[in-house]
Length: 192
Length: 192
Image 1 (cartoon, one colour):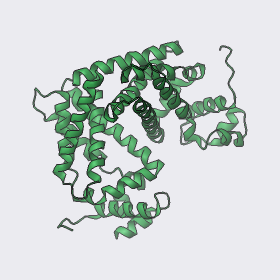
Image 2 (cartoon, rainbow over the protein chains, first blue to last red; image 1 turned 30 degrees about the vertical axis):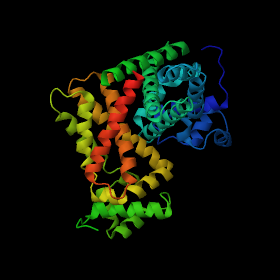
Image 3 (tube, rainbow over the protein chains, first blue to last red; image 1 turned 90 degrees about the vertical axis):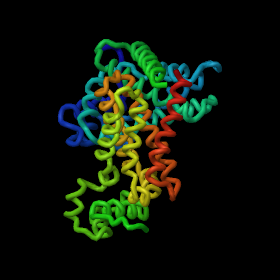
């Protein structure tokens, strides 16, 4: 392990992913998660409203990064170029903790109907954040909506690839995101 | 009202939508839904596993219609032309009951976090059904994925428009779906 030292919030996420993976999401209690993380139950509730939200804790931060990257794109950049910059900005969130928990996280979400639903709703939130940022740049609504969907698809495709490669870096996550977006742009051309 | 007479399943859905709308989703029990529908609680459970599934009851039927429409498209039809036929086929499910409950249904889903999550997961299922049907026609994976997303977006945009027009017919739902898909195709051209 490197020099990265997790705080209480990170320890809670890692403990939860471990427990969900070991014994199942439904069977795991907040008490068990707090115990494994070495914190009190009230510390848990200072960080998360419940165990479900814990697994999508990064949603607000991720939405903000995507929107910022789109907002900061050069004035003449097209919608998908702006989305690419949003994806690059969002990839900065994929640091050591994501690297460590990504494979188990993916398995845990796949195994729980409740978490799959929460994850789908997370995607809706990410798309909405990108759509809004694109419309603020003057992109027409239907184009902004579609560009945002392409952004979400690219992000998921990149994450799946990244999670499967134990040594992939934060920079690789950015590159995979932009490559996936290029593939989707080509697919859009094929459909149009 | 016309000559359409709902069976137990339809009465349960309508009673649930009414109760969710009147008193909130969280506050409504299966007992209350069964009572309002004039059936027993065990009849409820013969039709639905719980109150949440009741609101997405049409998912399996809708997925099947979308996939059938795509499968039955003429051999030379492009991916989005096949999706358009899937959407037309799916629109046949938008009959008198949908017409009656659509506006309240939309309000109920918007008001409940749990139902918004279930609804997002439903969209994932519809997209997967279309993607699979497109790949069975030989459409490459990434193109099929994107065409399926366009289909889901078109379906939602059409439903929002249709639900807001009290006199819109089943045929109108089909037309709105295809129009929405054309708008999205134009957006794809703008992005590509």
